[in-house]
Image (tube, rainbow, N blue to C red; front, top):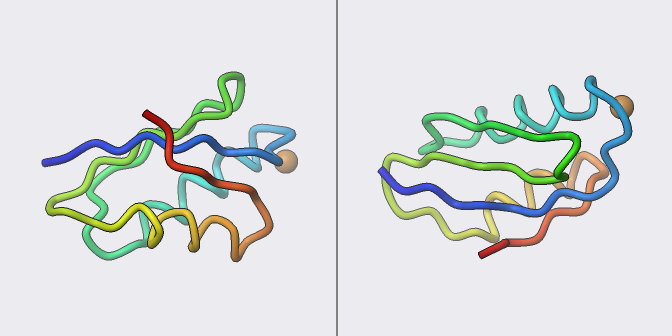
Length: 70
Ligand SMILES: [Cu+2]
């Protein structure tokens, strides 16, 4: 299992955070996702190696900004 961190911009309330969590969890290969509204960060657990672009693109399609974070 691998964990990737993403910076998420554009979330303004808990339903945004829940939406982003759902978007990430629906991506094939993602086993878990935790999104923090206050930090503007997401932690994504994957079963194998997933290109971060796959994660950020899925989030951006729904109107949020996502960038890989260290
Ligand atoms: Cu919201």
